[in-house]
Image 1 (cartoon, rainbow, N blue to C red):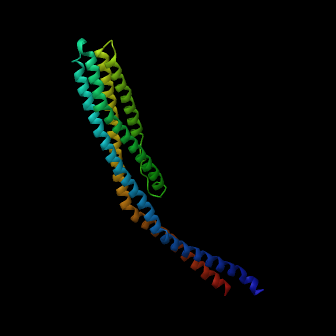
Image 2: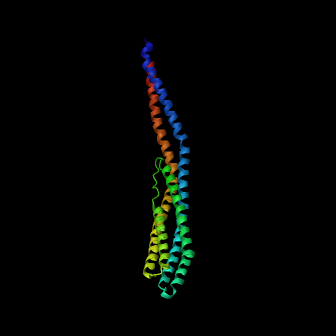
Image 3: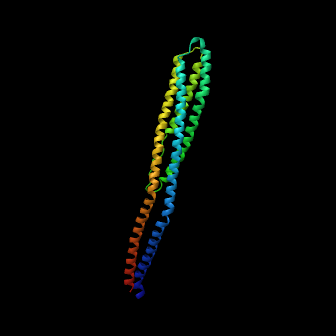
Length: 250
C-alpha cells in the first residue's frame, strides 16, 4: 500500500531525472555545435568575398575591353565621312580590315570575360543561398546585370555585321553606315552601364560578406549562451521537481 502511495512520487523523480539529463545534453550540444557552425558560416562567407573580388576583377577587365571596342568604333565612325564615290572599294576593304583587326577580337574578349563573370556570379549566388540558411545571415543574391550586358554585346555583334554589310554595299549609303556604327556604340554604352551596376553590386556583396563573417563568431556565442541559459533554467526546475518528488516519497 505504501508503495502505491509512493508510485506518483517515483514517477515524478524519474521524469525530473530524464528532464535534467536532456538539459545537460542540450547545454553540451549548444557548445559542441558552436565551433563547427561558426567555421561553416565563416567559410561560406569567405568564399562569397573571394568570388565577389574575382568577379569584380573580371568585370573590370570586361570594361577595359569594351572601352577599347568603343574607341575602335569611334575611329571607324570618324572615317565614314571620308568615303567618296571613287574610293568605295578601298574604303570597304579598309573598313573590313579595321573591323577584323581592331573591333572583333576585342569584342570577343569582352564576351568571353562576361561569360566568365556570369559563372562567377552563379557561384556567388549558390554560396549566398547556402550562407543565408544559417540563422542571422541574410545577404542579397546577385542580379541579372551580367546577362543583360551579354545580351547587349550580342546586339553589338549584329551592329558590327550591319557596318560590314553597309560598307560593302554597291549602293553606298553613308547615313546607313553611320547609323550602324552609332547602334554599336549605343549598345556598348548600355553594356557598360550594366557592368558598372554589376561591379557596384559585387563590391557591396564582398563588403557585406566580410563584415558578416567578422560578426559570425559573436552571433554563434550569443546563440550558445542563450541556449545554455534556457537549458540551465529548465534543469534547475527539474532539480526542484526531483526534490519535491523525493519529499513526497519520504
